Amino acid sequence: MLPDEIRHCQTLLDLYICLGVDVFSRNIYSDPETYWFGGICDEIIDDFEVLEKKSLSGKDKVTEKEYRSSKGSLNEKLIYLFNESTLVQNKFLVTDPIKEFELFKHFLTNRRWEYRKEKFNSISRLVGDRGLVIAGEFFSPLKMMHFAMGPVNAVYFLMEYPEQARQLLELHTTAQLDCIKSCVENGVKAIMAMDNLDTMFHPPDYVKEYSSSFYIKVSDLCHANGARFFIHACGQQKDNLRLISSYNVDGLEGVASPPLGDVMLDEAMESTHEGFILTGGISAMETRDLRTREAIFKYVEDLFRKMLPYKNRFIFSSSCNTAINTSWETIKHFRDA
Image (spheres, rainbow, N blue to C red):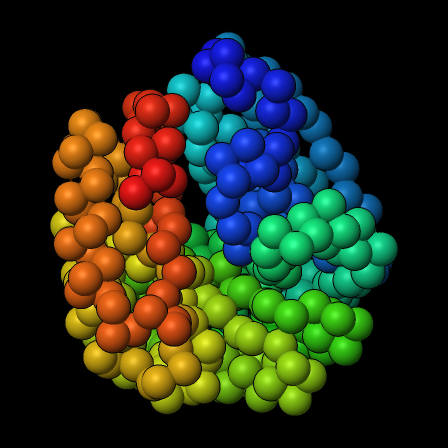
């Protein structure tokens, strides 16, 4: 399906090299058909046997996982939608947080991650002086709840069973911090929490209550080892910007302007500390709506003029996602601009 010009590309890094762009990525080593992120750190769950079944539904790839332990089993189902180039969660790991609390607590107690230094180093060597590889492997305790039981059940559980919820949050935090420590002590210079930090799912009160401690600890751990800490942003950011900045987080990845987001990039800069880095500027709206070279060049010029006062901390890049019907010519126009 690729245009002739890039038919030789076998990986995302091949494409970046072909485009001649700088690399600042946590995607180049991950498999989007398997999970939304990851590939540098191995998930290990003691006392659990993981059984995985893969099948096809048309062109869609279905992955069913069963986690068997001495205390019972948990199951989840993921589907990679070919036509949308997107992975969706069809069944959450935890469907009844009350009945499955002890089993899920056992799962979190035994789950840890191991940093694969050689794999990270091999990817970094491939990138060379073209840029920086981000270890986009991590996620906050609140995001863990979203992943495991879905945002709706997570909210109910957090509100109705705060003491039990706190136990789960702390177990996850401990395991994540151990792996992050291993990463930054072994040369990783950029860590990212894959939280999709949208105020619809991460309202300021929830960030303060359930995520702030994690963000502060990760920031401190990274800075003590000469690394930077980023959070993946998706959707509305405005109401969280000052809060996230106050935790000494180094930046947000993929900030989008309205209508996908709710704040302009230059406004976001004004709400954050002087070292806070934002990546973004090319959202699905721009790749969909800007159809000509002239329109793209004008958009980029106007954006760059606004961002000139913040040029030391702005990375012009994609904002979370790219419209599925984006043409190769459009991508090249953005590159040229």
